[in-house]
Amino acid sequence: MTDSPSTLEWRADVRDVLVVGADLAGAGPGDLLIRDGLFADPADARPDAHRVDARGLVALPGLVDLHTHLREPGREDAETVATGTVAAARGGFTAVLAMANTSPVTDTAEAAEHLLALALGGSVAAAQVVPVGAVSKGLAGEELAELGLMARSAARTRVFSDDGRCVADARLMRRALEYVRAFDGVVAQHAQDPRLAGPDACCHEGEVSGRLGLPGWPAVAEAGIVARDVGLAELTRSRLHVCHVSTAETVDVLRWAKQRGVAVTAEVTPHHLLLTVDELLGYDPTYKVNPPLRRAEDVAALREALADGTIDVVATDHAPHARHDKEHAFVDAASGMVGLETALGVVVETMVRPGALGWREVATRMSSGPAHIARLAEQGRPLVVGEPANLVLVDPERRTTVDRDASASLSRNNPWHGRDLPDPVVATWWRGRATYGR
Ligand SMILES: [Zn+2]
Image (cartoon, rainbow, N blue to C red; front, side, top):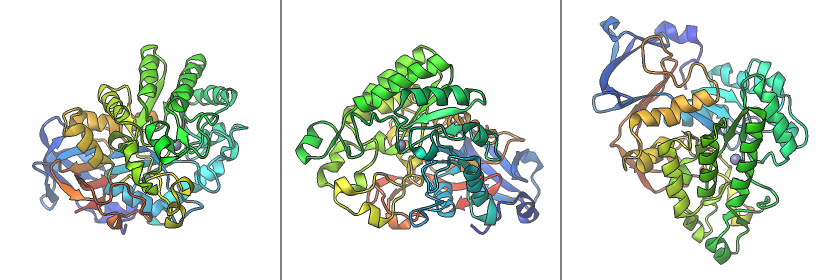
């Protein structure tokens, strides 16, 4: 991006932007004035304000992704803060939580502050980058990382996760939950019992895994860990977040946990809302992801849970990989898919068009909900005067055939390539700065 993220610099040369006639997150049409990084009263617009005709479009607060892999530092061949946040802006996101499994791992205050400095320096970031701290040193699952120091650092870390790996040791998980409670943090668990679904597990365990001869990843390996962690969250009166829920069994556990009043939240990825294990029949490693694609009945249960709030938010698990890591035989290929640019399109296709979610609920599931889980004060705010101007304009009718080569991401492991999908994002502003527009 050529715009500078420095508040003082962009204030000097950006005129007022007056967005006219957009449906304000399902509340009906209205105008928005963007001035000095905030929403101001549209009646105060200067005559030379830049007018954006948004009739027929929907205005949502900037989207927040709780689960992004930016790959920097360490794997800048797959993604960087710069490319990943441009992809985020194109997807309508104004903030991304950057997972800790980089090289080095974000397991110290210095590492968290280093990532923050990368994002703030040199005009590189097109969205707010929020470091996620590791739960355990080096993601090794043995000793707690510097949770308190990360929380007190300039990064103000509130979300902690060993994502990519499960915090399998129940005692370590208990201690992490106890620790983060002191500063209102949350432990985000990648639920995968390593004794039931080890590093080789790459296909939902069932008829397809048997037919293809691929190592199975049974549903109970997820639901079992989530049930245990719900018990630990209840015991410690602390906050648990469940990453990328993929099975109907886990949805049942979450429903039970919420009925008990346990402080548990959960996310679902766009790919688990639409794709099934049948995609694996061609052995295409593009569809290798962890947790794996599941059965059609899981997809239906996940959509129902997202609609009724049992699953709180959508998160992308954007996981870029360089070609040489992905282009292998299925069992040897890296796990993961890119997803920032297509996330809202998949949500429109699977939830909005069928009538399962309205725009108000989309704003909750993709903006205010994730911002609240991560305790981000300036994201997910309502579209009213005085709030930070984090905004995405959406065209509900627009569609496209996804082209992986048109992506801003450095990686091409795109499961939607060649598919006809909604292409809703028209423009994005982060703190009043245009980060994407067409
Ligand atoms: Zn994960």
